[in-house]
Image (cartoon, rainbow, N blue to C red; front, side):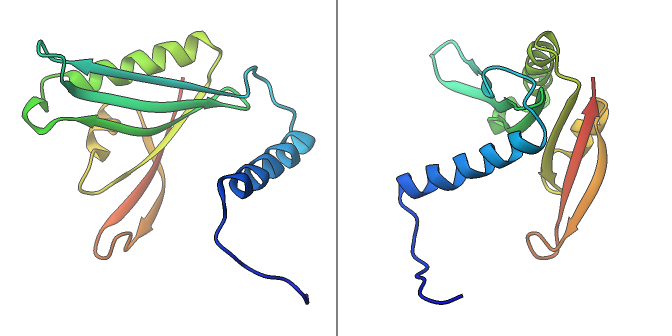
Length: 141
């Protein structure tokens, strides 16, 4: 390899790379959903209109759901808000034909919460961050 430059990506560069892998993936395994990516995000607000909990997830390509973030404000934890949000996105995903959900969480986050909801660990990354574990989890629905 000669005559090349590595530089920080622009938004345009990011889209070129992202679209390149999407095109390649679809040439190997045809996508089974339209639209190819569908955000399934929900939030809970208190009586003042402040967001106290939320979940961000994406149903992608092959009717798989990736849960990116599930967050509940500290004062409202252990009151069922997280379970309510998780159940809601699982219900929507299932209605859209989803059969598999996956996510990752850290040892200081919510592994036991997800296990309680039927998720199982399929991979562990040690020392991410140092002296902690990152758990990769899935659930068939």
